[in-house]
Image (cartoon, rainbow, N blue to C red; front, side, top):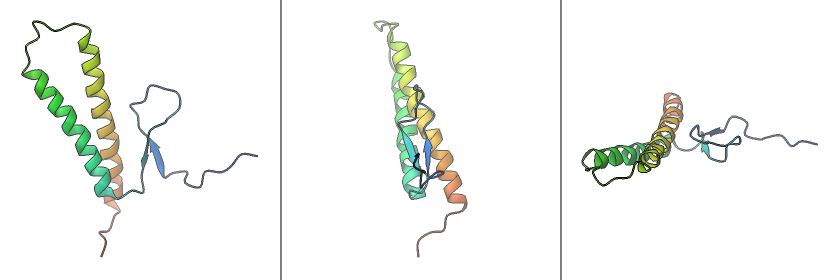
Length: 98
């Protein structure tokens, strides 16, 4: 007999996954400020990585590094975007603790 998920809408999968299942989830009931901070960390890391790459000289770089770098930037940015969407939805209906 299948068990029912007690939180069917609580957990949202992160869209950056490359598998059929979704092992990474966002707890949509977490504090919106915590969700926002997690999003900012990922977007900040992505931005800093791009800034570092912008300042680098690629004369001695390897063409195989490009997909590795773009994949890392994609993961960080997509995760940050997914978290921002959840934070936005939560904050629209969220009331600050008294």
